[in-house]
Structures are given as structure tokens and as C-alpha cells.
Length: 177
Length: 170
Ligand SMILES: [Zn+2]
Picture 1 (cartoon, each protein chain N blue to C red):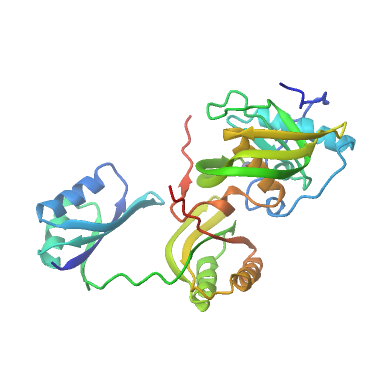
Picture 2 (cartoon, rainbow over the protein chains, first blue to last red):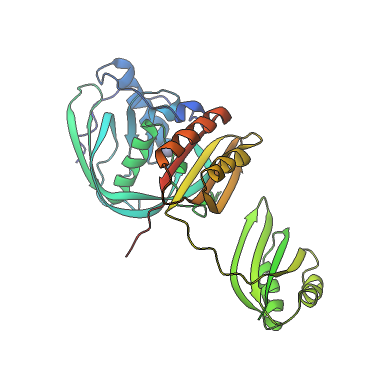
């Protein structure tokens, strides 16, 4: 199913902001999904995500905009079970979460570290599609659930470092060239 | 049998743990708790070893066996572990690096009777990260502590989160 991705303008690849930039630590604000700037941002997030190897999600504040918008695409990721393909949610809200599991996360905005974070493996997230503003409910599991919670955290000004499981749950990221 | 504290620090290479623990095993030492990690390319080990062999002898055996490493061996009083004071919390602090983050934050924790049982810091480019496990007395007003933490964090220009350390019971 790919009914979640509306027609969008051509996306631009934007620079990704890195911690400790304050935009990553501030709560993002609700926006109008029909605002052309929001629609353009949706396209830009997907375009930026697409050129970033291994990137399965990107929040608006990671490109410097404090708006409640993120993109997710876990297509063909080995840890994904359910996948809704590439999509963008505006003003998303977590409405259900269950079955916690620990897993290791990285983030484009924290490029050199990874950390073990406990996340729900089943979630339901309500949000609006960019452009139409249509309300959708995304029910998913496994890796897509983790990606959604990671991006929702970004919109609340949290990075995975705020949730690491303990003092020995932070690691230097391995770089494979 | 007496307890010894063995600390070893040096430029990381394959085989450090094998070399050090090999000598200790040959001396009949029994490794109890240990912590080993890599810090900025240096490998750091702290080992608590139970052995009949006196500290100076262990030192004299270890030093030539790992000439590239700094070794220190000390007697350790054999005291029972202090009882757990209360529930465990995880503190994460991150932000732009500056002097005094660890001292300011741990000072505040201590003023609430918090006991840090584990702490890791990482400097990654400009980003400084501290993650600590903290035991707080049962009666701690956590909301008040969280408010105080937010205060010192904003003074340092960093973000601080204090959450319960949830243990999975399987
Ligand atoms: Zn992220």
C-alpha cells in the first residue's frame, strides 16, 4: 500500500543539523498541512532522506525547521516487518504503544554515536498528510514503529541520547567505507 | 584471600586483555568485577582480583609482561558492597562541550543524596554526552530534582533528562 504519499513538488536536498544545535532540543510547533511551505518541506525531507545512506526517517528540525513534520521510509530495511513505504506526517501524535523492546539506534544529527533505546514494537500514530491535510492512522510494528517513535521524539526536542538505557548503552558508531 | 585492585592503561592493541589476564591466571588470581573500555584510543581496565600473591609481586610480574602499558596494583580492603539506597535512575546530559559539566551535575546529584553507580562520558566532535546511573534515596522529591537539573543544565547550555532505569523482567 502506498496511499500515504501524495503528489509532492520536486524535493531539494537540505543540510542536516547536528547536535548540539538548539533547534534539536526545542519542541516543534503545529503547522498547517496545506501551507505550500509545509508541502515543499515534505518533499525536501524525502529528498534529503533518499540521498542519505541508511537513513530511515528525518524530522523537520533536523533540517533546521521547528515544525511538527517528519518523513519515514523503512522500505526494504531488513528489520522492518510492516512498511508503509515513503510517507510524511504533519502534526503527528502517538495514540497507542505497546510491547517494549531494546534496540540500537543512530541518528543523522548525532553522526558518531549509537545507543540502546527501549521502544514499543507496536504503535499507532495519527497525523495529517501534507497538502490535503487528510487525517490518517498509521498502525505498524517492528522497525517502522521504532522509526516513528524516534522521529516523534525529535519533534518534542528529544534525541535518542535522552533515552539511552544506561551508562554502558552508548557506543561509538562504526564507520564502514 | 585478599583482594587487589589492578588498573591497566595504554594505547589500544589486540591482545591486551589476554596478556593481562594470562599473567593473573598464572598467579592463581581470580577475576571478580572488572570494567574495560576504550577511551580516546587508550584501553583502560580496572580489575578486582582475589589472590594470595601480594600486590608488589603481581606488579612485578605484570609490568614486564605488558611493557607498553601502565600498570598499578594496590591492596583493596575487603568490604561488603554498600547496600542499594533506592531506585535507580538514568541521567542523560548532552550539549556543546565546556568545562564543568560533570562536576556541576554530579555535585547537584550528591546534594540530593544521589549515588552515581556508573557513568560514561563521550566527546564526539562538538557534542559532549554524559550518561549516568544514579541511585536516589527512597524519599527523593524527583520532580524537585528534575527542576534543579533543568536549572543547572540551562546554566551550562546543555539538555538533561532524568528517567527511571526500567529493568526488564523476563
Ligand atoms: Zn534522528
